[in-house]
Image (tube, rainbow, N blue to C red; front, side, top):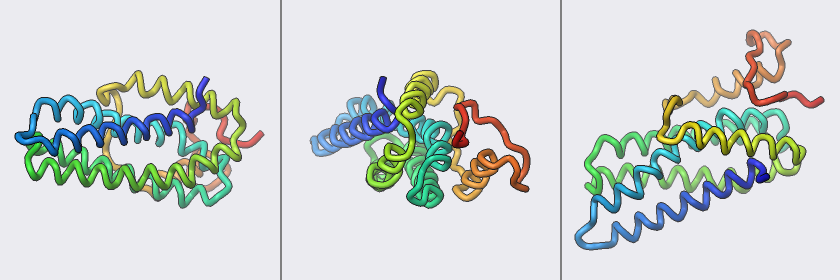
Length: 194
């Protein structure tokens, strides 16, 4: 069974390949809008679903188990997710392969590249070093199930999140004795060290 850090890395590799495939199509004259759409539509969907899966499953656990400034890593990640979503959603407002569409896709790609680099060098190694393998594998199953269940962005909100509010909410769930309000279960297992 793959752990969540490997599944996230696998998605990152897939994202890189899809953007490379878009580059190939972009270089063709004339551009084939249908071929571009065939790559972009599943890529845009997966970018949205991947971000929400990380926010629901990975980042709460990183906040609980991480040791290398997980608050800052998480704030950056949620901000990056917002930038990725903004690019994806901006592209949806323009006809495929137009200049405005490519500009929006380029913004999504740039934010995604930045996010993947930071996550691969900070959040994922931190989690691998400090979370037990059994937890990583359990989260991997949940992550894979989430991606499958929400294919096509079905049943999820792809709206931007306030990074500070997101971290405050998760930290309140980690520490129900805090004055931030009652703890709400995340449905992903214990976030506390036992």
